Amino acid sequence: MSLRRASLSIVLVAVSLLSACALRPHYRDMVQPEGASKAADGQVLTMRVVNPATGQPIEGAKVIAGGGRTRLATTSDAQGRISVPVAKALLDENPLVEVVLPKGVQSYQFQVELPAESPPPAAPVAPAAPEENTGSTGSLAPSSPSAPDTPAVPPAPEAPASPNPGK
Image 1: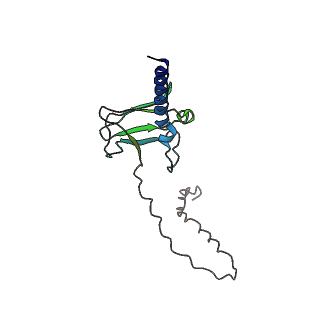
Image 2: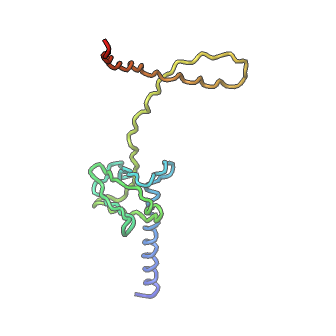
Image 3: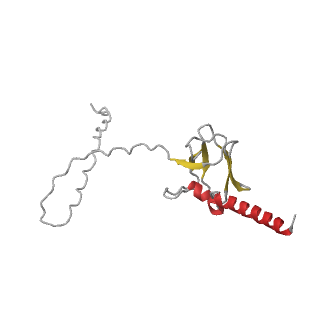
């Protein structure tokens, strides 16, 4: 093997390794995608690993990020779901996320599943207070609430009358 061919092989291997690192998402990009609200420390996100060409979930994809004590390691279930805890240590480190796909799967995409939000409770409708004509041009101050009703205190029982000693 000539020197030229050997150096070309080394360059190709280096470029392919660098491109593999450049194409992987970082932890922060995974838990806080563009346009999404910021995830709080301690929050657990539910995500799906899907095939971008078909939209089908990928079962058995291993997702790994970080190292040492702050490490994320999870495997997708039959619906492609993974639970990703948001950790400040991982956000600060911002490691590359490695995804090991099952045989036959060529590419993947993360989808953040938003938790089902319950509708906000309906506020009780208060009757409008009659406006007083004060002649001012400013806004009306809210009227002060009336004092709460206090329960009537029953009268204390009277002590039995002592017998008159003189009668």
